[in-house]
Amino acid sequence: MSVSQLLDSHYSVRAFRKESVDDKLIQSIFTSAQQSPSNCNTQPWQTYVASGKTKDKLAQALVELIMSGAQPNPEFNWHVAYQGVHRERQFGSANALYSSMGIAREDKQARQMAMLRNWQFFDAPHVVFFAMEKYLDIMGSVDVGIYAQTVALLMADNNIDYCFQGALGMYPDPVKNILGIPDEVGILFGMSFGYADDSAAANNTRTVRENLESSVYFFN
Image 1 (cartoon, rainbow, N blue to C red):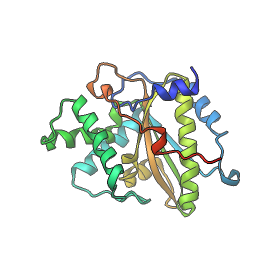
Image 2: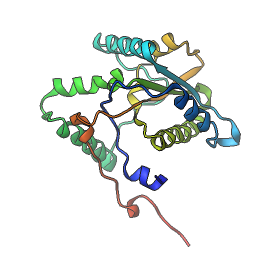
Image 3: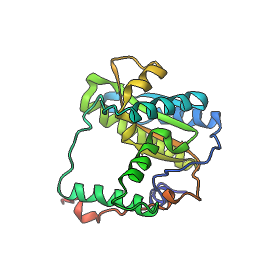
Image 4: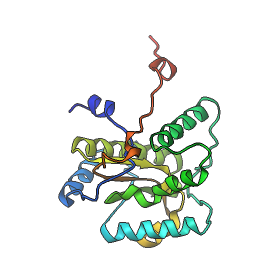
């Protein structure tokens, strides 16, 4: 399958089967991802992949923290308040998800429980946290984003499903404690991955993309 075909067929998977991805295949994907480009070849990504009991321990710790009423404390700026068309697209994405799951707009409890699924990694057998040294700021985050997309494309090329999750950078403390991530390294975001549960309503969600003219400007 070509890159174009992979992108055309992409959607965010929010329900996974229990089946694990082969360890050697995971190693191969992250080895290949090391070829991702970065500014001045700095390769700033620090990548933490959790599976099995460690992944389950992370999910339990995160859910307990969130259910206790703890407020998010991201290590990078996740406090952007979307405006205008960006706000409209955000609402459209949420509406597409909750509609596919049969959750009414006024059912706040059901929406909160659906949101909580982020920190249960949507029952995926694996989760990866993308991090970098905090001082790298915007330059490092650009490189980590390019690297993460490389990882995602390699996964798709191997028929592995995934979901990028900004939510996985919102409560870094239990993750850093369990995985032994040093203080100078901050978690940007994460990604759950495995094999999609095609019977789950959440996986019927599809979002639309803007026309080329609204985003790309050509000059001769």
